[in-house]
Length: 395
Image (cartoon, rainbow, N blue to C red; front, top):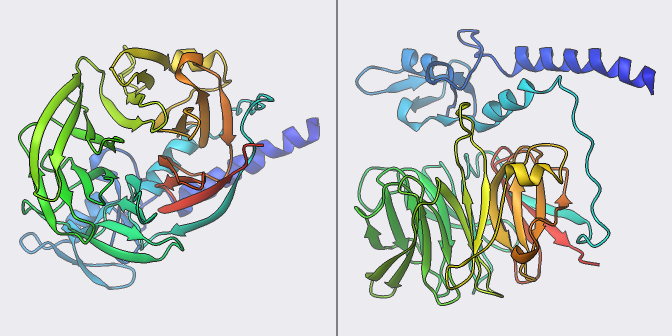
């Protein structure tokens, strides 16, 4: 054991040095990438990565036209996007040389092993995806991402069936999508942080309704069994229920269900119990770091379960950062954990927290979750730009 431990340290440091040289510096100016604006890594449409400062230096000041310094493909500076895999790698390598905590063992009553059955999407097909939903009627998978057309629909085999939602500044365009849901009658609802609106499309991409001026920063969105739409407002700290006549494209009613939430983002509704789960992202006092809290309300909006990062740390050997939430078919709360690159079952709200890791490897940066009718779990992995399908064996 001692020989293995002593050998792994130098090997890890060599791997980190190689990553820093090959992946984490701009090959135009040879400056190290970073999270600050000037040196943020940016994807060019051809797939090559340079820092934002070099994009600005290479682009024409009026037309914003530039040429990739590596493959000479023409593009525009405004068509670039953050390279999330490099940003995630920077975060990971910041703690790479610290000893990792021992992986917890699942409780005997934990769900069976979830095995990745297949994956689809990938870089080029998806660019920095942020939201995932399932069409209840067709079973097709809907993803919002940073591509030229912001909404992409995949068939059951993972092929692209349709895409829409142009990248642009017009009212019907999508500037910066954060989340998506598909209603019971197959309408696609997108939260757009770019103009702080909710946009409703039919399943073929025709705009039906734009709801603007009511939200400070609409973030998470979810369909209820009654075909209502739940929306979190991250800046206002509120949770809203929208009643929409989708065929007519008319907003019938807006109800504010909760206020005084702390930067709420993800939201999920249990079709078994009607419970509503909300992910809060409060800032840790004195550090500026973001933590997470999972709150679960009954269908009548009574708080029935709550757990924060500190409470989870009593059961788990390392910090859990919940980036997405959903319910399984038994009413258990399931969260994606970006700190441990895992998916964790928290149990039923009245039992919080019964911590059961159900996926512990194979993920790079999970940001969205949903279960299919066949009880498969779809995980949106933004760093891999893909959807991973896990078959569930509940034993």
